[in-house]
Image (cartoon, one colour):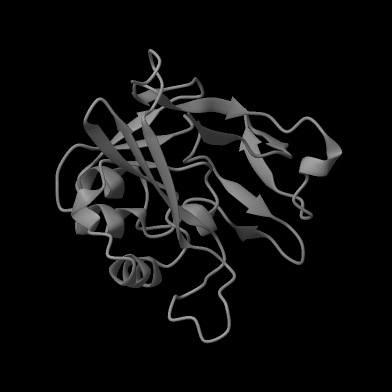
Length: 191
């Protein structure tokens, strides 16, 4: 029997990411999507963490992995970049239910961009804005604080970059209080 608040089982399935083996049937793409299956006291929850950037590729990989989109109980978006969020509204439509929790940072919809080699938006794209997510069956849970998805499974809340090795190699910017700011905040899943 699990300790109070501890999961009895946790399974992490890589559904989509940017490297696939030669002659693999799976579709790779820039970005990532993971399916977390958590169990505790006979209760099982499937949480999709990020949706990469191409919903058709993600759905094809889900099909090959025998993952039924309607089995997804919640979606966690770790941060705003398109390679983690593009197509989230389409995925919610495939889930086919209303009130699917979509957990993200409270500032996920703010403008996020790069300037090298030119000014380009890299955040939440058209088709995945707040109204699109809600219109596709999602219920937004926007917070910078930790959030329990089920006993034993929760987000960490906002994770600040504090050391040089965490830099991603490109300069990312957002606009906060009418000032350009160089950073990105993340949510992580914890258990």
